[in-house]
Image (cartoon, rainbow, N blue to C red; front, side, top):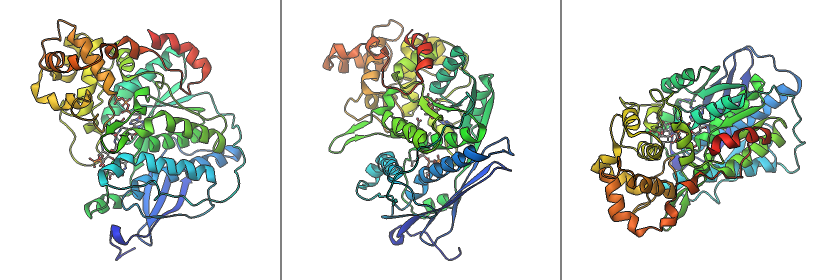
Amino acid sequence: MTGWTFSRESIRAFRFVRNTFDAATGVAQLVYAFDDGPELIETITVPGAPFALQGERAAAAQRALRLLHLLAGVSYYKAAVPREIVIEGDPIDVDTALLLESFYVNGLGEFAYRNGLHLHDRIKFPHAAGATPAAPQLGLREHALVAIGGGKDSLVSIEALRTAGVEQTVTWIGGSQLIKACAERTGLPTLNLGRSLAPQLFEFNRQGALNGHIPVTGVNSAIMLFAAIVLDADQVVFSNERSASYGSLIEGTGEVNHQWSKGWAWEQALGDHVQSHVAADLRYYSLLRPLSELAVARQFAKSDRYDAHFSSCNRNFHLLGERPAMRWCGVCPKCHFVFLALAPFMPKPRLVGIFGRNLLDDPQQVGGYDALLEYQDHKPFECVGEGRESRAAMAALAGRPEWREDALVERFAREIRPQLDPHELDVAALMVLDDAHRVPAALWERLRAHFAA
Ligand SMILES: CC(=O)N[C@H]1[C@@H](OP(=O)(O)OP(=O)(O)OC[C@H]2O[C@@H](n3ccc(=O)[nH]c3=O)[C@H](O)[C@@H]2O)O[C@H](CO)[C@@H](O)[C@@H]1O[C@H](C)C(=O)N[C@@H](C)C(=O)N[C@@H](CCC(=O)O)C(=O)O
Ligand SMILES: Nc1ncnc2c1ncn2[C@@H]1O[C@H](COP(=O)(O)OP(=O)(O)OP(=O)(O)O)[C@@H](O)[C@H]1O
């Protein structure tokens, strides 16, 4: 629509307009709008079209697409956070409304904190009374779509599934060449799902829209669940570790979790909802939920297959703007943390070779490491392990001749460790596997020993 300009203060409502999927081309459109403004169209592309979707599977694909439409709206809603939410077409049920409220309020927790907003009483999804009939079994093919993000975590899952003999397709969303290279390095079948945000969002950002972190793993999960039904696969596997359930403790505010949609509460809510509302035999789980970040790092260190390909540094993954010249920028919280987490489990020359430098011998990085250690600062808003994991890893290095003289390790031993409880610095305690997870029982039986060693 011409003549409409983005003005956050005057926006009244956010509208979920419609969603469509063209099985002939594999293109889905998710359409939103503010008030009577222009349609904001996000596009998702599933390769391999045309698809023959019929009967129960076609209906389930429609339900999965609707759920994706509702969850992916978070990218646009956040631009103005209006009080009114309008869902056009069939109304949703109360369970779906509650799921969405939890996703928008908690998933936008960091966004709200940074923008000084209170979303708890603001976000209400309209819904109809009455329950929805339970979703049917579709008889989906036994096959895993495994999300790959270019970092260590998904590679650990992929190798574990290979060990367990699970048939898998390594799947990523978006155009990252780095992820593509990692996916190809697995030697397994690959799938690249397309995702393009509505271009007006970037214009709105330039015009002063509210901006900040969105629960991107929740959106990626919904894209993969939709693709699983289209492609006839019975499981979607993510690699979200136990540590992702713990946020940053902010004085005067409480816990704010940057990675809330990687956490256990969301995994349970989404996984249960999909089985009751989309398809009873479509499973969503994180294979690494029982593991701490340090336990994942120990698994990753067992093979050097991906050393020259992987990166956990999020600066590689911007949609707009410049990417770092090196795979590891070396100055962000993720680089800091991954270097520290791998150090107890890898020969030092191998680790320094991966990063191209020794981050623990660089006094300039002291502030970054203090935040990870929760020393005079809070844990950064990033996907990094718990403070106790960073402290335990640092304590382990302080006892190793090859590390203990490096600037930040030496400072930790001298200045920080004396203030800590020695019982909390035990790496072995952080290797214990947790029982809270949604990994299918038979698969977990096959993998427990693999992850414990
Ligand atoms: C790559 C990155 O970290 N981006 C975050 C950054 O975005 P930035 O403005 O610097 O640039 P772009 O990534 O190019 O995005 C441009 C704008 O597009 C909007 N947007 C983007 C993706 C999306 O899914 N929805 C969107 O609305 C947004 O307005 C962008 O400004 O800062 C933003 C906060 O201001 C972050 O929201 C961007 O984070 C991305 C959504 C992202 O994909 N981040 C992952 C690398 C990430 O954080 N992964 C975590 C998982 C966390 C979780 O699930 O909650 C991880 O590493 O585990
Ligand atoms: N572009 C993407 N497409 C599909 N899945 C993704 C994408 N980016 C991240 N993921 C998935 O989201 C989850 C969280 O991402 P995260 O960045 O923590 O994992 P990672 O890249 O495997 O490892 P690391 O923590 O070392 O970066 C993982 O399961 C990852 O596979």
